[in-house]
Image (cartoon, rainbow, N blue to C red; front, side):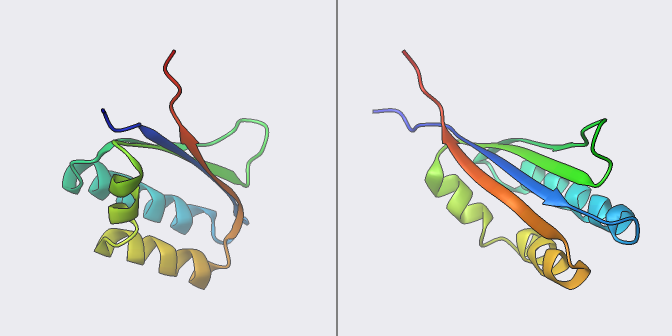
Length: 101
C-alpha cells in the first residue's frame, strides 16, 4: 500500500516587532526542508492579505514518518527555538491526510 501524503497547516500570530525576524526563520526552515528532506515535497509561507500579523505554513510530506523526521532536523530546532524566543503565538497546527477516492 502506498504512503498517505500528509499536509500540514500551521498558523502563527506575530507582532510588528517580531514579524520580520519570524518570516526570515520561516523562509530558512522552508528552504532547508525542501532542499534537505527527501520526504518534504512543498513548504510555503503564506501571508493572508486581511490579517497582517498572521503567518500560515503549508507543508506537504510523503507521509507521517517524513513529517516526524522533519521535527528532528537541525533547521526545525532553529525554527522551534525561535518561535519560543520571539514569543510567537501558535494558533493551530493541523495534520491533514490526503483522501483519494
